[in-house]
Length: 191
Image (cartoon, rainbow, N blue to C red):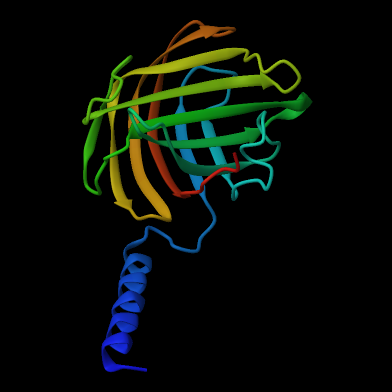
């Protein structure tokens, strides 16, 4: 094999190793956790687990899991989502939308309806979603606060967030979302 080909292969291998070294937790289980106030008498959302095999094939797969994927063409987004099971066949679902061009170290502001703004993130949490109807008991939208992407590679994204959410449903009012952290695999769901 020519020396030039060997050097090129060595360069590719070292770049791959660098990406893994900079990854938040390149081989760990995906996790997303945060504390919240006033809803269901609970105070912590904990989702830990890898992407279900049937993710992206319609509906929300059962179980506890967290993941991220890229979405959209005209206004690309990096979507971080997580689910946790509850009793009675219900589940809670959290979705955090980040700008597609987000960079490691970038701080983002939570605002409603910010579309493709480079410094804006959106977050929705649905509590007590009934699996058969996909209707939640309480739905919350974060209206202020901030998030920070601490690490980002093609395979993993990690960061933190906190803010104030406005909720409607069984619980009407505001909830504080605090100490939110995530470290999840970036996947490409099946079409």
